[in-house]
Image (tube, rainbow, N blue to C red; front, side, top):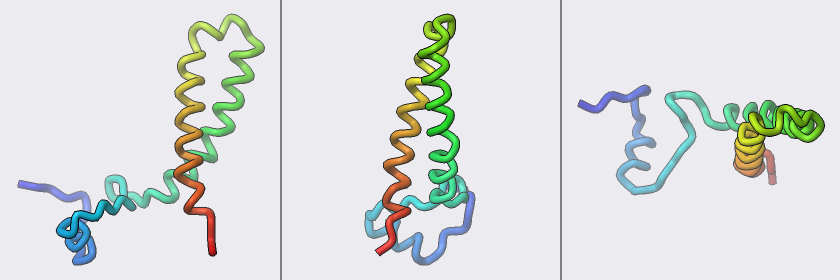
Length: 88
């Protein structure tokens, strides 16, 4: 038995049958605000983490991988967010 987090509409069924991948929801939440807020949180967090790792040698060994992952996630989310901000 297949359970849905939301009831699929006729449009959703069309996309499923046509083979077009349409991703605008993650567990029923709209993806646009999630990505935008991810950028707003991850970019400053990555910058602060990078500064701390650079200037406090004691933190380099333990927190460098975490800062690297945060920087990569911030970069990916910023590139995913960019097309949503461009308006013709």
